[in-house]
Image (cartoon, one colour):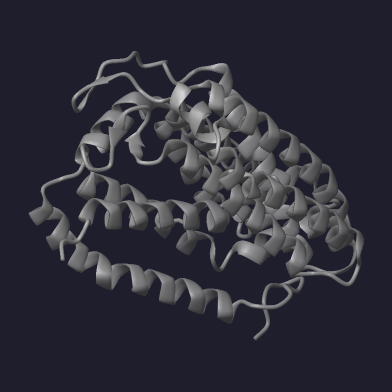
Length: 335
């Protein structure tokens, strides 16, 4: 029985990127919401809610990028060549945001600078991630493993729209995280903000869902030809159901965890929808995971490392969330 190594590695990378979006998404969302918080004490509590876990969340980004380089070097070459500028800006945003975590609580007269660093670092990193996603969905011009497009091919209306959409999405994750992790006035504020953000996110999901099929004929046929239309119809219907449940959960004062979990579900369904549209291409519109893969010997050897590394990352991620479970107090977690 032969093992489909490209398929296995595609699964590892998909999981890594998805975990990054979910876990780093809500703490980037905290930064996006930072300037709109009710007061400075609320900002302290917001930052305290993610301070012990934010850096571990970014491990998944490293895992996804390293896996792409190891398993699909052709795709890595094309994607990075096409997206150097937004990726560099994203890393700068993450750097400023990370430094703000370390200095904000220690600063006195310069504290406002670290507030801005946290806010704009989070916003810029999120927006550029959304632009990268939009550019990836649109696809790249390439000849073999060489990117043949221009340095600004990523700068399109669709990519800019997905950038704004991801800002709204991460902000919703951050707001529902605060509903789960805080109490009192800050939680009430987070509930109110979540409703507004949920409406915006749902509109963006609808726009992307209607726009993507018109980017490529194959995607349109995959979604809107019979019997695919019947088989795939549960995906948008599930989005509608989650939206209704989330609205109800946000209107009830006794639901704390449910809004965050349902928001994760919205992200999961959106991710699934993009996966259905793009599969099996690792570089849209026409470079498949099998064409772009490294030699089987390389993938097989590296898989042994992934067998040990991925469970370790899952283990310490789960342990850190278990340690810092429950509500955050004014001065941090108490366990």
